[in-house]
Amino acid sequence: MTYIELVFTLQSQEEFHKDLMINALSEIGFDTFEDTDQGFKAYIPESELDQAKLDSLAEDFTDMFSFTYTLNKIPHQNWNEVWESNFEPIQVAGKCYIRATFHEAHPEFEHEIVIDPKMAFGTGHHQTTALMMEFMLEEEFHDKKVLDMGCGTGILAILASKLGVKEVLAIDYDEICYESTIENSELNKIRNIKALKGSKEVIPYLKFDIILANINRNILIDQLETYARTSKPGTLLFLSGFYEDPDLEILKEKCKSLGFSYLQHKELNNWVAAKFRFKA
Image (cartoon, rainbow, N blue to C red):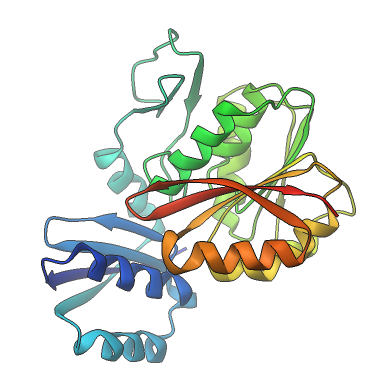
């Protein structure tokens, strides 16, 4: 799959300007972002780029601050080289160590996850993935049935398995993510993750104890009704992939209308992960 890379240079000292633009880009399909010294880079599958929407978005911000951007095509075969050159091991909450196959192992950590860098989202480096993992490390997963929506590399599903779940269903619409989840499960010797390619339509009529969804606000809002259908009293729902303002309040209201009560949230650089419990 060929991706489009947008390299943004911002002539603004206000950090929230960048956040506003990233949030707007995520709403028109951009799914991965990387900070740079002069701004940021944004990525979207070439087939999903709507140039008219991008032009309209750019016009909306022109009066607020100055910026420029360039578009580059990134063939799939080059992406692995980009990730390998930039992917450094990280640790989450002092308990989980995330590395690639070409990094040294550190078995002294309670949990070690091996992720091979690919075009799939989710290496733990992005704030939303790290926040979700922090929540998970605080939760009881033993013998639970878990749904991981927008699984990306499968990193959250793999951590859930390492935390003792009974089984995990990992779903992503992207072929690369689907394949990455299977490959990374094998790398980590995980046998209780089932991967499916698709979106909410492939979620089976089952009840889950825990639902993980690290996507973006608009997709979450679209899928929340399906999450409610697959929940039972006490089911925990962890959401991420959105900003604190205004997204959190919008999602809290939507969740409340479907029977999910808000419990708490974590925030990092204005990105948020939130925890809910199903009561209906």
